Length: 198
Image (tube, rainbow, N blue to C red):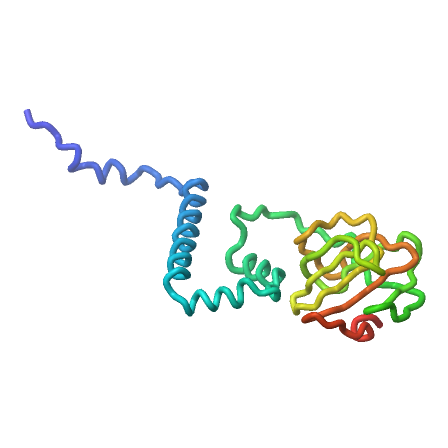
């Protein structure tokens, strides 16, 4: 009796079996491996090529790195490590502009008279690069905008923002009582507040 050779009919048998989708874990491991290979390649190139090493030392280790631009580039072209979860389309709850009763020059910026427990909006979108105490301004929050301008917000309380949070224009920063101090700076020099405050 003749036996059937199974290898002869393997394609026909497997043709109707559905192809399995790539698992998320496999996809993640492939991305990690690509990043590791790129990192090691750049590290070897850095060690062996002096021109590349000088370029990296000059631009990567300088004080003028704009984390806001890096984050925007990363989100636009690379996305996150984990897949994005579709969120429901919601409208903004807080969308305000700065309202004040009086303004006057104050050290390197301006002092705006506002009400008690005034809700402070963001003047320009960007990334939070400093949260802490500054002389003359009290509790201060500094946001670096996409064009490299640093927006200082002084006398801020009740903020839920953390370092390196990204904030949208006119969104909520925190509260200021009676006085809000604003300073605008770029490339280690202070800018005229009249250009930013009506």
